[in-house]
Image (tube, rainbow, N blue to C red):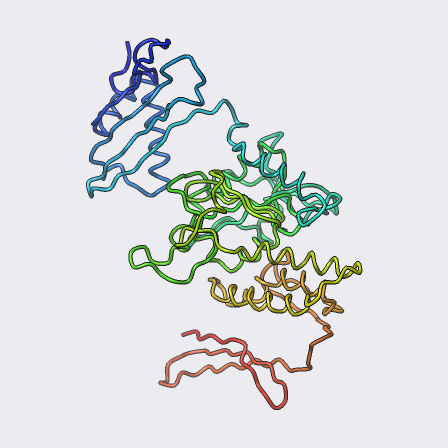
Length: 459
């Protein structure tokens, strides 16, 4: 006997050449009716588990649901199923009048967790750009530490690479206000044995599922990574990668605010408002953005999207704007060509102008710690300086377990358009009104001029 609510995921009537209307519609049902049906119907149990997963991902409560509707369409003739309408939608209406749409789809196995567009885009990039901007040459050196995603034994763990070479994938994501798992001196040995699955954020879990289908490790050195997975629409680690809403081709940080939605970048693509991510994106060879509705693919020569119309969009906060990633990669390529004797007129001026623009864009992005202001753009600065031959010597000792974050000590020798100066650090521990307050300021002095670098106040 069929289920009155879901009809056991079957269309009505025979599948023949008479073009029967085999769709199954339930215009209105309560959440309790679906719960009751799930106790005896396996298909309704699948619906409950899927709906709960989507609701939890978007922080929506079951108690606020007013009713739902179900609209399942099925193949109506034996022809090519790809040309027929077979969408299966559940629309949940809430007591406040808002609606939430959930689309059902089937996968054949774990390999289908990796969208076909991943392989297509990466394959195109490898074929078409092998001799230019996206060529990594020989296998790059692996970072000092990578995450083994447990392809063989299911155990996620930290691995010290000991100078090995290989292919790896990076993850670019917002932490959010809740502290996510990190590796410290205290947890280092433990994480080398295993990293508990429950301790990982949803974004990490989704990324690991995807990377397992490719058989690649994960790390955080973006310059030589095979590609970078970017949780572009997730404001924190709990939202994960997989959710779809409306098509939006907005991929640059926009400062102006909309009267209704505020800053469109912060609302639709919060990852792109973070200063650290700006550098991660610039240095990555390839990036797969998990957007609000579809996937975007960036490599150094260009950009693509699943619907294929990103280059056609014009105007508004949802449009594709000029990508500094492409310009940055092109500039580095021109410097490399200049070193081989193929100089371009005005390259130094163009490079300096683009760098000023990059710094200006970077300065408008968000940092949790002001002390990260220089490290968060240091990778790009190193890339340009190495090509402009302005850094003669650089030696840095990190204060943490890796090269990111605070610096214990170091030395830097530069040449070219440089001038000798003195770094100064001043601390005032008294507030003007007698309160306990510490004000720290940094300056660089070029006699007789003193320039303020930054400052902060702690009460």
